[in-house]
Image 1 (cartoon, rainbow, N blue to C red):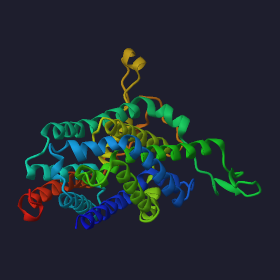
Image 2 (image 1 turned 90 degrees about the vertical axis):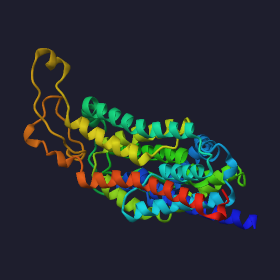
Image 3 (image 1 turned 45 degrees about the vertical axis):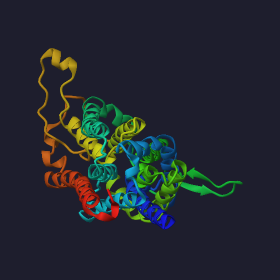
Image 4 (image 1 turned 180 degrees about the horizontal axis):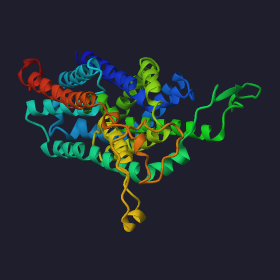
Length: 392
């Protein structure tokens, strides 16, 4: 009976990992696929490889936090309880997907395990408090870092990084050699190649950061139960993620590729780099991070910084006033367009505040990103507390 339960637990963990792979590949490699830099299959392979590297190196620290530290007695992770926790992670994520909102898998996983800990009276309040504090602080760090970049550095970054996509394919495959290699076409310029290469590198960084944080969401309960060792659990979880990256992720790659390539390349690079760096840092100290929420705050911070660019220091010393500006969107500047110096913006080209984000959509996203973990926590607590089969 134990072996059957373990098999069921592994299958549920595989299902969670499968959905993680499908949901995270689009944000990571959507721009590269949309720019025809790599195929969807290549994106799936890169996602799988770098997700595994992140999971194998730093991700095990987050697995320890969720599977062995969030509850005082890891013995509460019976096979039945582990399956129940994974079920609530999957069910809560389904609710988010149903409403079309990318829910945080990390917050959902922590909520489910916290519900188990509360029901058993074994929740480690100190660890939970540390996680909650970082959840509150990290989005604001991303917001302010992105705001500063948008306000003071975006113009110079945009001049160096922005590019205009040329007509036709970026490269062709030269099969005249022993090993087929990609060769730039006549219409592809060096700046374009550099920009596309940077998009691919950023995608790999995002895949690595996803592995550091999200592997725990699929396997931490089973590792905490002691029925599955760390290394086999990571391999199984990454294999499930890999299957998701080359199957259901194709649809999210199509959607995210078309949507994200409308953003300036510079904005995509800044928000992805800041978000991924924060997630990697948090994972290194054992904190399961929400990439979705951090990235959202980075996007808003960057847009707000660009919209409220002040006068230069020299102008401030001379007492000159800045041109009044309002909030603009990340997509307000055409790809490759040079921004004017700080304080020299043209007021006639300034959009309204609603161009930064749709208030109704933003409210729905923020609301659901917080409701989904609450559903997981409440459902897990009620189930583990009152359903006799778990014996807590």
